[in-house]
Length: 425
Image 1: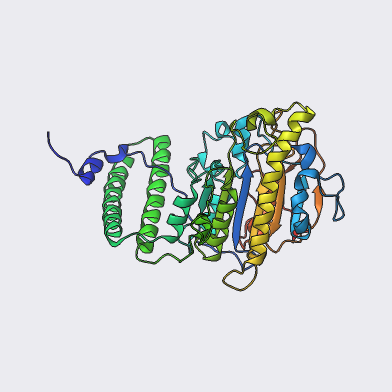
Image 2: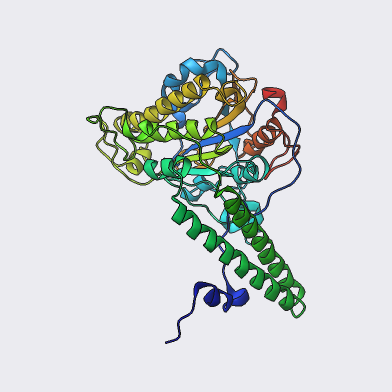
């Protein structure tokens, strides 16, 4: 049998190569004006939060902190809570949790998959191009979609994340990586040339598809160039105490979910502080896992389908209060950690907590549990919007304000009808 090297084999496939989509598929060149915020973090529990314990009763600045959010009381002035935010047109079911950052369901974007690009990945192309990682996708529940409409994978292993961020490859591995990058770049040259020759023989509809394919190739080339540019740049140094637990050899750090939540948050702070990335998404998984907490007798999914039974709501509140407490600890660390300009990371980072699932018990996508913190916003209040029939205010209105606060001059995103500048800036 004839032996084929990697390049020959792939080149022989010609335009039939099915390229994966990468987060850096396409980047806009224009930069917005400077602003207080430079970074974006999204934290998303897959099943959302029980509405009865999440939303305050009162509006304004003097609201009573609801039961599930009690751990966030110390951050009241740094936090804004919203009621009656929706993604119009998004239906119910488990799929709605994946629409948090784009506002569209997969089934509704067959003609234009670009509409699935999520807010974080758009930001990766805008404010993530000067960092080693345009975005970090962490945890076990993804809400991130590429510009090509592909759901992107996450990493929930703290040791692997630490290595990716702070451990340099050995010289031999760097050399091998550079070789593969060169081969891949050469392969893309061949594919693009063949595709352009094919273009003249295609009908208009197929030419449009081919143009999307070529756009994908350009995006892949951008990612390959980025990887090559960063190969010889040393990674920042950070102590591995965050995953080891300190100098005491007897200290054991549980790196399994959910106990690794605090470790992942610590890694996120380090990633932002060292300018390794400006964009992070951290997803809490769904599923029916049994949380190893006192008082929990059923799987997570089973508890979310509580049917308002008090005993199940009590167990679910243990999990969701844990999420709120860990998020509170994260905000505290951001507040206490200076960025490269000397201001607190919380001041220079827009932090959003939320889910595309409004009420997991009913699989509802209405009244999404959304909070924002930091970012130089005028925080400290609870805002409740009116509902117009089935729909509340588009969540994407908030996205427009986030974009503008990050210096990106954009007036629309997804299904937005305006912005929330009057409330937050």
